[in-house]
Image (cartoon, rainbow, N blue to C red; front, side, top):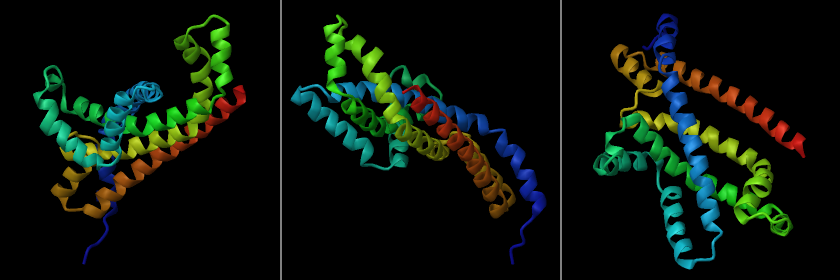
Amino acid sequence: MYHFSMSYFADAFLPIIECMRVTLFVTFASFASAFVLAILLAVIAMTKNRVIQAVLKVWLSLFRGTPLLAQLFLFCYGIFPYMPGINQLSLTTQAVLCLALSYSAYMSETIRGAILSVDKGQMEACITCGMTSIQGYIHVVLPQAFRLAVPSLMNNFIECFKGSSLCSMVGVVDMMLRAKMLANKTYRFIEVYLCVLILYWALNMIFVAVQKMIEHKANAIY
């Protein structure tokens, strides 16, 4: 019969916490990259070119309709190693790129919807004042769209944080992989995985608190 060991449970925290910086790096780097790419995809999606829209629709469908784990295996083992420049990057960076591509597909729809929800008169007023379309988007439309998109974007961030744990399956030494290594070494699976679960939960609670603060400040501006 399995007996829970508090000593193994306590000892598991430090080795896993040492890999927290990798988990946080993957999360923040992939989300920031996905956010920039999502803005570009959202703007492209509003073009009237049918060919561009058709290609973009297939691109978004690919990443939104397939498992993230399958994407990680495909890109990190099947595509990136054969791409000049990218194949010189570390495995962690390659995983970040894959996550950015995946989550940008979701975030682009959020941003596109937020942009479309801004009154068209805002852009017309910018053009009337002598601003270009790009200036109108940067200075007027996107700031208002960002406020509307904050709740959904923060949810995307939390999903990105949780999804980062899948990077352990392609060899990124994050909290999840370190937990797996400890569990395989000590055979104390319950203690180790309970430890990593608590750490992910604690970080998630912090992110949720920050989310509420950002939403409050974004709404206060208007």
